[in-house]
Length: 271
Ligand SMILES: NC(=O)c1ccc[n+]([C@@H]2O[C@H](COP(=O)([O-])OP(=O)(O)OC[C@H]3O[C@@H](n4cnc5c(N)ncnc54)[C@H](O)[C@@H]3O)[C@@H](O)[C@H]2O)c1
Image 1 (tube, rainbow, N blue to C red):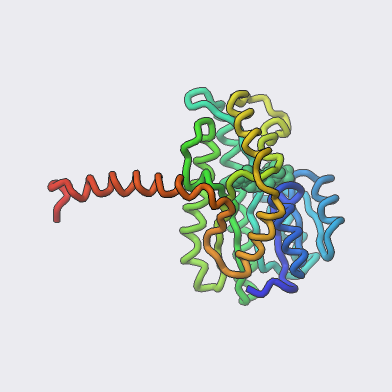
Image 2: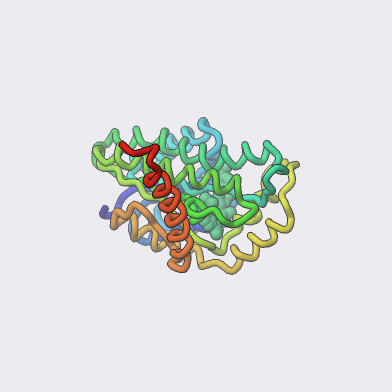
């Protein structure tokens, strides 16, 4: 895809990876609508970018996403690229996780992506010139071996599956679909539970501390933003940003294949 003069809608764009993607797209001549729950943050982020605008939007709220889409059409007249990036995280212990926390993370990390796709796909289809969708998952959407992240992992595996499921369907409309799967990136994701409005539920402090240390030792979000823009242009289905995690992918595939082969060897399943 040629990026110059396209219009993009990017969620979670006030900070971290979303801001990195917004900056990278703007630098490539894309007009960007930056959307985020954090009003002052997203206004400040857009103010620094040529041809960009900002809208306050809670991706967990379908009415807010629809209003943000209308604001984007009013401002730019069309949408070509959708980046469903807003996400949250918290440290959890299996059997001791507040259901309110579960619902919060599902509403943002999974339903936020669904709201974006359901709202913007008709708008991209309407102009008939195709487009591209990036849904931000995580390496935790491919390998979930780190204790304390089960709700986060469940939402990110869902985002991977959802992206793969809509890819074939949207190909006929020339709408590409990528799933972004970063490793550790130096952002404020580990503070999302503490920043949550009216947060009364708890997270497990030891897990939160471990995740915080890994995030703070992560790569620069601008590197992720630039690579993501390049992968949109190249039409890549998977956008990985951490080449050091290959062994984790291999481990998971080996475990799946070993148990699949056990079934294939069992005479009860012979045709
Ligand atoms: N940082 C990492 O190590 C890492 C690794 C893998 C995946 N990710 C994913 O990257 C994405 C971006 O996270 P980040 O690391 O840049 O964190 P971040 O906290 O710096 O940025 C997330 C942004 O999303 C916004 N946001 C949160 N809830 C929202 C909502 N309901 N509606 C709209 N905006 C909302 C926040 O205000 C914030 O600006 C997330 O989906 C996250 O799961 C991050």
